[in-house]
Length: 360
Image 1: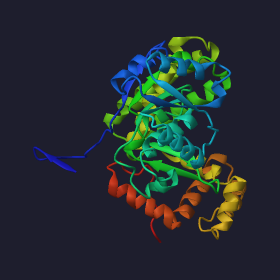
Image 2: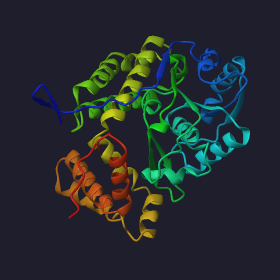
Image 3: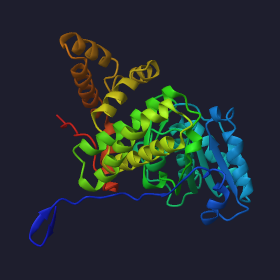
Image 4: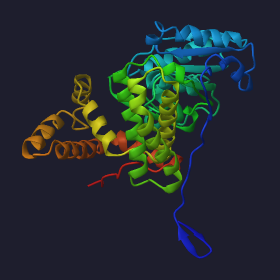
């Protein structure tokens, strides 16, 4: 609480927003744009979604970098649900080739790998060393640039990355060092997205904006980003699905995803993401990890809890909420989760996005 002229008011914070450049043809101008960040003649690591190769976007990005006087080194070993090992391999390549920056082009997976690579490449520790806020990121990092080819995750605007560990469990990395130096939004990069993915990623952006503007941390300053994102999705998503080549609709959805990403970066998400994380944790690799950990996080019996809740409730939505709450409480008993939350709270002004259960 802050006291101003005898009135009590709640303090709010808005995190740093990277420079954002948007426009058709922004990819072709990338080499010239980067001159303000990296001296021409430097080597840059291009982290790309391998699915973009057929569309020619990888070669277009590399050509744009070469046109600006940079040498482009390609790293396209990026899969959906990327792994710590992939980020470590990219970081090793960056160190070996002494690159000055990392350019990530693709969806959330490629951007998470690119952001992590830029944050850890100047040190000799693996990405897992920084997982769950176990250690602070190195003070120095490489220049990082994100070019999203989908309009949904908002990863280009956040200080988070999600990577899979060796045991297949998903691990969060968090820190301002992960936030890119520059965001380049070229609507032409998204025109090849199938209608189904356009719709799915658009709903992802919408949910981000709704959750960030309605959870316990929401405040009017951040609502500026969230409400605009909601307005843009409502105006442009159907058109982007029906007319994939409409650059105005695609640009509107790009802005929506980035603004929603800014929204969750400031105020976090809410129960929809908690349910998604709970369900994702029940995949077979995760269950094997849970058993090896002596059921520390209570994961194996959660599927039974969900089935029981669904059988007792006429509302599937209520069953999912019960399931998510039970999953969160079980996870909270894991000492690693408690340590992560404590370190995050100590290092960052960003509040938690979900009420933490009591110790008992």
